[in-house]
Image 1 (tube, rainbow, N blue to C red):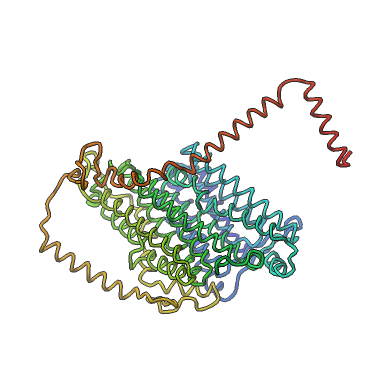
Image 2 (image 1 turned 90 degrees about the vertical axis):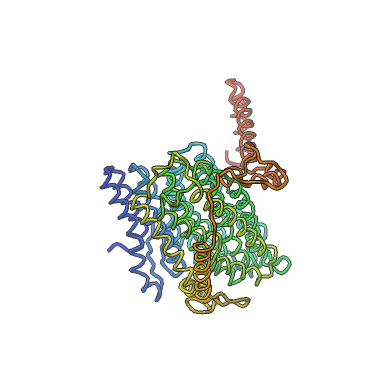
Length: 614
């Protein structure tokens, strides 16, 4: 009998291969949708069993134990990935035109589900690489330069992980997570693994997982890879694949937490290794959010936004507090559904208009009312406005940071939310309101499959926002205690209370009052898009600060000093130096002189003789 765990993991890639082989429109889409539907159906079926006890599948391959497990934590991550994967599949029915996309989209789904369910580093690494390869192929098809950046950073992450796994195997004699955790727990008292080796392991894993999460300064691949893609697939790329890096950070806690604490201790009252993770997340939030504000292309805006929002999760885990970690786990869900929804909305805009720049868009709310409603839900959730899921998770993250006595880290939560509000307000008005450009006069609503995809992710944004206790009660089970108190509509932490139901009622009342004032009291008039002003300066055509063009140009000018420095340019310069060195080495070593080659051979033989090999 085939284990349901194997069905969850490998059904997508099998159906992806069939969709690629039978590359006919209806057949391709039917197979692809089936492949994306099976994992979430199996996870729903296994939920009652998982609540009682973990489900494990084990097989021995060449003497090594390969194990998959569905427990409360792996079910949570797998369910999120499967939900976003199902939405992706519906979106691709409208945006994809060939079996190539279905093959690699579903292959990456298999990879990420396998990563979440793996309980050993053999299956974990192999499926991690499958996930990376599949997503690389999706980017490669559309932009070779961006795919190269993604490839190089992914290789750095892969070799970092492989080296760390090799060191762990040397020290513990196992690839199994449970064995490694127990061995490192015991070694925290014995000290067999030195402090320098522990720091090396932490750095290698943080690099590997930081690349996939898109943490600064390893984020440079993300803006291009997210934007230069099928935007329906990007909903999964950003919403689910980035969570593999987040899940890896959790693995550091689970496998090495005790050992890292024993060797590195505390820094100003904070667990040192967690403090590092917190500041990596905080810097990622601030840097990516500022860059998102300055974008003129909606794809790049949401690409940088995706990087920044994952930073919240790293920040939350880095607080080291139970409330902070609970908030981070909640934000894993809320980010997946609101960011996945944003990318599907973006897919609909591009599909129906062919435009991506703010200056070319406007007034689409009248043309695409349902898509606008979905965009509004995503805007409210991302900006952290109640009663959406994004507010509940960010509120818990802020509570965790305050509880951990990290005021500066907590301040970045506020700053990031303010910046997020700044860029989503521009998206909301610049794309959906105002005058419609003449060439968009015939735009129609998005196709039905894409609307279904958006609805799949919009519902949990509202549901888990109004009833956040549905999520926190499950997170309490994961963390093994009553970390977040309250009911289904109320969250209680040691530092505050949030009543989602009361906030929802007050919000609806406020909207009703505002609507009445608008209908019966407001005197609206139409104005040109360029009817704007800038305090103290004349408005000229080359300094037009309309909502659709250069709106945040004053901010860009204020940040001019910092914008001169770019990690992207730094890496490109570094790559150029390595290329120049390689050319110099090649020209010097491979010079076509047979006498030189003879000397090379003699030197190698001498070295081997000195080592006792010969």
